[in-house]
Length: 418
Image 1 (tube, rainbow, N blue to C red):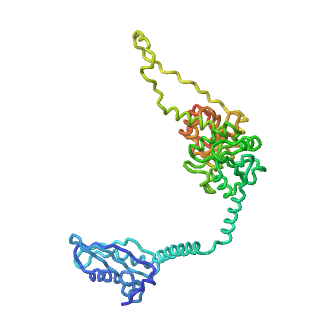
Image 2 (cartoon, rainbow, N blue to C red; image 1 turned 90 degrees about the vertical axis):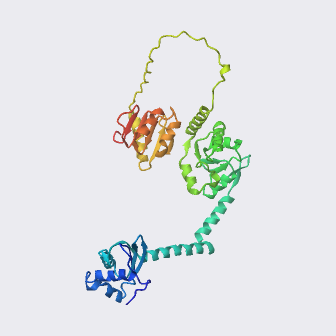
């Protein structure tokens, strides 16, 4: 009887078998050939297919559990997909093996070429990885390595304080201020040449003088030390914008992508000041401020009066103010610029942009800003959580693409209204 080589098989039929009794392996194979004989026609007769090598050796594995035989049937095939599927379906008509009832169930038809292709891909990855590790860098890698070395060599000294800086600090309109030399080198390595370091946490006079001539963007670490540097700079220099590294990370260890993302998320110095004040307030509230009992002055006990049910406090009326035509024009322009960005703009009473933030951070940002933001324009739908946060922050106008809130104490303006 002919056999099919495992190398030439294209598909493998995997099936399970349950027999209500004890039978031998030849009984199972005999039932497969006997009960499918004449069922599929002469072209798909199992004996002829196996004799011609288009069906391989049928493997039957069984074991006895609780007086029943259970196991698997594996049939390799070099037929096409349709013919292999017909042969697999024919197995499930087998209902008896010997004197026992049986049930055959095809679990899957495995494409041998898929597993071979997966092996080829994984092996190719290993070979490429070894080749990249052992061979010489290509021209692009060599160019990048030389460029980074040149950028690091471009670190110069600026002013009488001899601060580490990039070569374009003098001619650039905007200058990035960071903490130390390591931060400057990392920014130079990633292509930022308009950068200067403070050489510590204290602000040198050169930075204060530079702030009068240039637009300064402070770029600090994402920790408490970064907040302290921002406070000190706000007190002695004219800062325009503030950017922070991700929480727990330092500027010197950021990748190029992380640097660009942090700089795109910059906020105005005024907004940074309000955030720091809100942070200090929340920390001071958590400190215990209970005076000792013995230091409290003794007050005379007033005579008891008949109890009167307390009156509910009158709610403070909040009047929703309609937006003027100039405000609507400004809102419409900002909303059009935000389409597709999933971002939000915070505006003050003069309709100046305080900062731009992702929509996902809008609720948490408004929770730290009370009576600072006049209007919020964002690319999204005004839902209840955003409206509630805006009401608590004292926002007067909320401009969105659409609204799911029917009534609110603040004015909600949608794109259709504009």
